Amino acid sequence: MSNIAVLKQKEQPTLFIRTRTSVDQLPQLIGESYCKMSAYLEELNEHLADVPFVAYHNMDMQNLDVEIGFPVAEPIPGKDDIEAGSIPAGLIVFSMNRGPYDKMKPLYKEMANWIEKNGYTATGSAYEYYYNDTSFLETELLTKVVMPVKKDN
Image 1 (cartoon, rainbow, N blue to C red):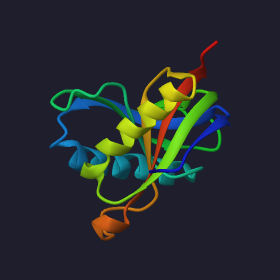
Image 2: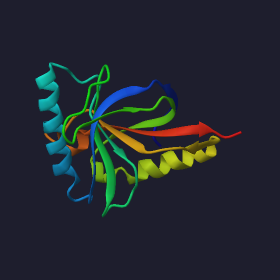
Image 3: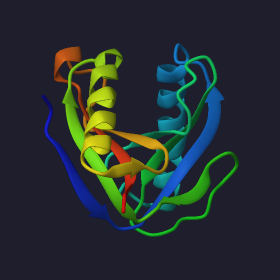
Image 4: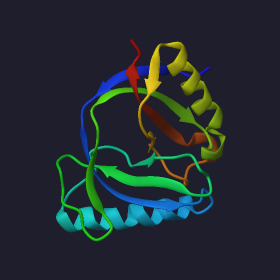
């Protein structure tokens, strides 16, 4: 059983690259996108405001619609395929996962069940925030999974 909690989050400015890919190509695409955005932040002498994320706008593993992004302290203009945006303010349900990325499906299912049992409805894209990277042992990867929700009446 995971620790699942509700928070109210503030709007968070971001830089991101939105694209479509298969789940097999995702790790390489995330790495390339993070490198490109890091170079852009360095060029502007700016820094991340929090850990990198990927927003999943669908769960079609062969044609994922993803937003690969960086939270930033203040809005920054986009450049080329890097876009400026934000993560909206509102209620979220979140949980932390320790372990391999490909073993997170049960957590998503548990969170969906928790949302339903506790009188909420999921309202948007799922976000994964990555606290460490693949240079760690797979068993030590730390990921926060976030789902925006609204309270049912």
